[in-house]
Length: 470
Image 1: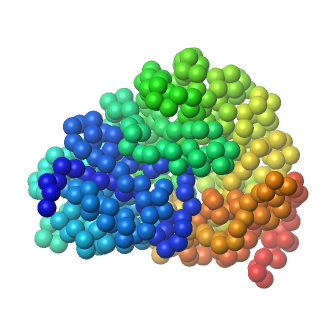
Image 2 (image 1 turned 90 degrees about the vertical axis):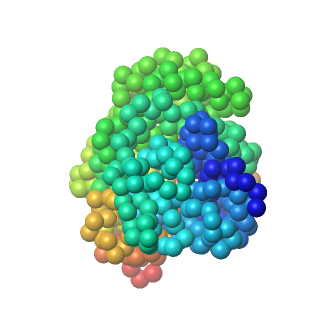
Image 3 (image 1 turned 180 degrees about the vertical axis):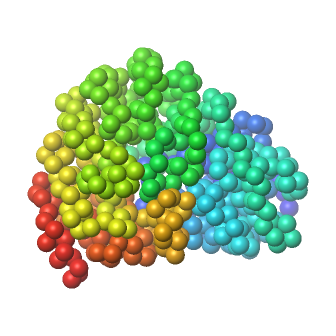
């Protein structure tokens, strides 16, 4: 057998191994951050992008084995964790000597559950860079002093104390996009009329504690942020490599720190890039929107989630819906494309509250919201909302439709538009969590919502009630 000169191979898995899986417009950024850090410390990390290539399960396992790494790194997410377990088992059949390390939200939430699988040897809990480097440096033993990991000794699970979070994010290296073939991503972006883009984050964490969101669990404590100078230098670095490029910032709340965003506005223009970002509607003013437009921001996404003021409080989102309406109009005024996110089917959401959300989205559309995305509510391990529904966790299905949908040159029928939107963005829980509509009915409601919004027509509670017969 050849020497193991690769310390770790990360595998980005598709949503499912059993059929063609929809590709994302961006690579697995979490793996790219980890691999970039490991290589910066003098070890060797590689990434196999099975998701991009729609690689079959057996071929993915064989490709891991062919790289002959000491370790395989995989990520456990709600909708795809069963497929990752299958991959680990297949790798162990071919190359049992490869140690498999799991990470991701589910490993942080429940290492005991994932490590009950014989094919998963270890787990990294929480932020991964430092703990993972220490595992790779330790070899196959001496794990007891490494914080932030879980592992097995003689079949018994050992969970070490949590690792302190990285205070100075500027200490991390630039993302090394040479580890990923970006050509397929650029091709998909072009197909979807998305600017040629790469992605990065400027911060980790969120100051808010929404009950449905895993961020408070995954990133407890204060929000940590790169310096503006560091972000500008990294943007210039990527522009030297890719030429004209759009930067997609994936922070939970890009506008949260007013001093930081003001400094960013002062420096970003010199880079010559356009950019997109995600933020809260109540973190911006007309001056913020104006400066976003002036400094090259072409796309903003905002999480609204519900059009019910009562539900905003219950979810601890605490958005003022009048502010959302006003700021959507401001984005249109200054020529920034604005998309809003919504959720339908919270565990205690009434038919009336569902109608409020859809009709609020209709009003936003009338107020020049450019686009929106609806999700059927999923329960994620570690969230406040999930604590009441432990039996429903780990049971998420990827929505799949084998009918060809999409727009042609003559324009799409609204039902095709709704199907295309839903199939691209949505997964659904495999267990019913809403007392009024089951998951099949909620899927139909989301499709109806898209049609209503596209046609700027309100929905009635009676129309939603009628879905109970579906």
